[in-house]
Length: 606
Image (cartoon, rainbow, N blue to C red; front, side, top):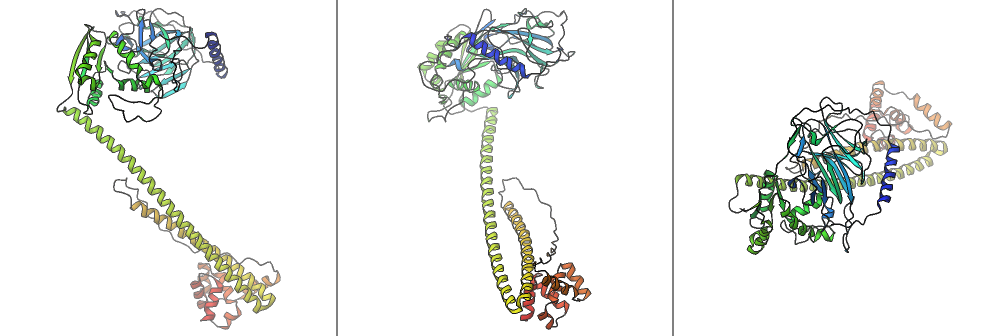
């Protein structure tokens, strides 16, 4: 057994009491108690005694004192594995409770070795209910609910909430199951500590409602006293215990027959032996697997993850889990389990592929089960498989292949998306660079033209031309920016459509986008900005306003947004000397995109 090398009990109790005080401080006032006194039961009592059968306990549980005390094995790495035990009586209706008292808290010696510490917490207690066919480890599936000593309630295997106060050694815990349809707390489970409620009623999952639920405990490095009979501590209301359940409210669990089978599968390595075993255990849940694979799975369910990938020696028959804990990696637990397996009668499957094929090793395995209650059976797993086995194997291979194909497809899709984003960014950078070059060129041309006009027309005329050049420059820049943005958006959309068309046939078909017609309107260019020269600019503007333009041509210019540009061009002296019609002026503006100077130069050059 383990040595008690933990911290002093007084110190531990003081620490946990202080944690409970903190939880009490943050909690609000509890609602009134809705549970009422139970009525005297007139139902016929069940004949069988409520206890824990050996077949309903994990191999590291040692029931004693008629099954009322559950002790754990804590040698050879078993101190890291969670133990589980389920009672042989289930409740299908009514309101009943059972009591648990932690009588011993252990701190096993891990030996002089270096390795990572065991999974936390070192000491664990889980109290709850489960269905008849659920796994012996509480929380392994959705078919169980339980409270733990850290104040959490777990349901649906992954839903874990802090709902109660902590509990510790020498305290009596009462776990109450309410399946009474007439009660306000129907289909709930509650926890009491020393007769005081420490958890509000917790709803049962939908998957458990209507099913018989059996008392179920889980623990690690703890010794528990489980009471199904008369209450050790009274609650604020009267309630029957599980042992007092009548035949109408209780359901007897599986009974021990006294005769058990030990099956030795005979098959070739990597020829579907473990796949056959998985199917056999699914159909026969009362059989317990004895193998290294079962120990590894038990460790993983107990919260011991592998620290690195298995080595080249890894196989189903002899796995190499790499837990980083010497007592687990060298399979010391196998030695202890093999020593106690024959003392805990139940149906076994000894899954040792290599040893079952070798006569000498098989003989040594058979010696462990010489007790008269065991019947040894050799199961030949060779030859043509059954149609059911083939169908399951093909389905598993297809699912594995599909999963790999989906992973590869997602990776290719992500890679293509990244490539597309890179190409779009490169195009955007190139367009931005080209745009910057065009703007710089235009700016130089405007400055040179402004200098020439200033030199030809004198100070006043130079100021006027400079203002006009600045306004036209800003008009051109705004127009070019808008056109560039529209073109950029169209390029991006065309790029996305092109990429979507290149998707593989295996990819999901993209949703078809609705076609929309966009009527691009030529934006009205902003009016020329005032140069700030005062009288000269104002006089020029007034002169332009007095220029008479043909009404029909002016109306067309307004629609195009060229009204100011047309008046500006018509007001130029050198343009008036050409004696061109207003329609010719508007045509020149259309060719230049509404820019006055390019239209003027085009007309003068013609």
